[in-house]
Image (cartoon, rainbow, N blue to C red; front, side, top):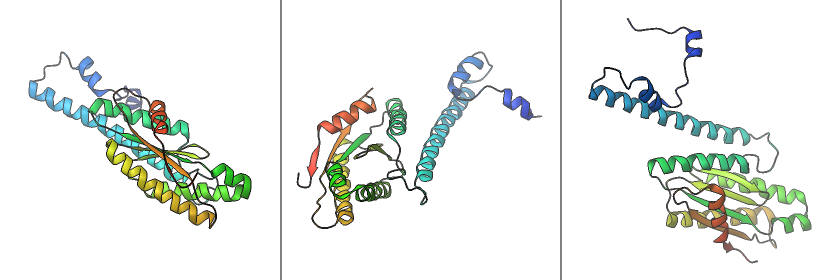
Amino acid sequence: MPRVLCKPCLEMSPPLSSPVDLLTDSLSDAPLSADQRDVWRGLCEELVLARVRIQELETRLKIMERSKPDDETPGASLLTRPDFNREVARLLALDERYGNTSSVLYFDIENLQAVKDRHGAALAQAALQAVGEALLTHVRRSDVVGQLAPDEFGVLLPRCDNPNAWLKGEAIASLLHVTLAKVWGPGLEPVISYGAYTFADKEDVAQGLKNAGAALTRLGKG
């Protein structure tokens, strides 16, 4: 008869955060055949991937909660810089483990502060809201979008190489230029810089953003 654990027993059970380690520690001397060990190891790997997917969904839920219509804070629908850095670091760790490649995009609205100083905070806030909505509606569900500073934004593109990252960066920069031009109206041309960088092994997000920022291309008159 299969063993049924009561609720207190379940609460006392050790967490399954490292199932492969549990296999090594608890079943190293178990009388399992080679086929049985392969099956169990496969199940453990599937559990790890399932937990990773759960974390990804939790991040997407966090983004959706921040994009509720009653949230009046400009850019609040985007991840903050600390949240963005943590999520990117987690995904880069997965890339290193599974041999994937990810790229990061960096966007800077260069004349946002000048528009705010000359035409008021309301116009700058409207611009940030429009930029946030444009970014979130024109990226893949697997991408990570964050507001790194009042006029700076980052997008992580999982499983994206450098040429495709630059193409995506140019497309998004053009979209943001059109979006801001509509918000600001005639006479105020947006000046947007964008850059792309593809992570190599064991690089952190801060260095990647720095490298993307060092390779900026300007869209608009400066």
